[in-house]
Length: 240
Ligand code: ADP
Ligand code: MG
Image 1 (cartoon, rainbow, N blue to C red):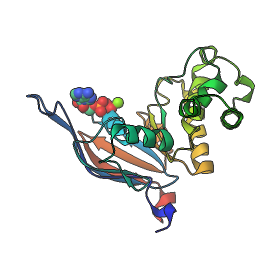
Image 2: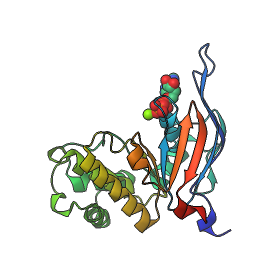
Image 3: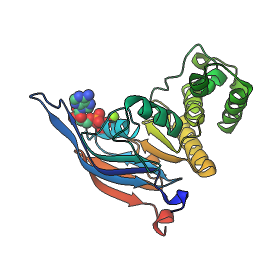
Image 4: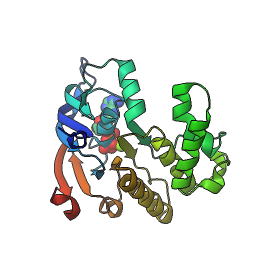
């Protein structure tokens, strides 16, 4: 099979319980099956408490399912030990959170270099060039030497998006990435993610409460009480 036909993400009947082995075990995800293809730009919506963050944590290999299989780029993750999961996460998955988690005293450039710096241990020209290019892509070349804590919320979220892309991930996971932004900044951050997804064929899965933003995705996956209740493709994807 051609590599491009292997889903970036495949979930087969994923269950997740908290408090396993205790008297208060609660299952919060009840058999989630889902595939995301290369370049897809998908929204994950659902009421508060429906399991969106839990699902994102599993997909991001930050936690393990209680049952079921999770494959990233065709690679089964169930039998991987923690250090193998960490490596896979570092190379294949980028994260954008509601709170950007930038290092406040570091410059935009240093923050974007950080994932490569962690891997290589010391700065080099290649990572400086990669970070410079990414900051240009997110429209922040002039601000690249500004400290993160001197930037606006929208600019910080752009830096976070650039940082999520440093390792050329297959999949970017975003949990309420525009939740802290005013409408105008939210729109432009969202447009930026779309642009990046289209130009690099990076797959995005974006948790959002904002129906207006979800409507701008290729696909809307709706979670209620730990189950997928709808999964709708925008017309543009329906023929594939
Ligand atoms: P959402 O992101 O859609 O608001 P969550 O994934 O945060 O939903 O939560 C889903 C359910 O799992 C909720 O009932 C929540 O209380 C519960 N939950 C989330 N994290 C934990 C945890 N670490 N331990 C126990 N229960 C949890
Ligand atoms: Mg949540």
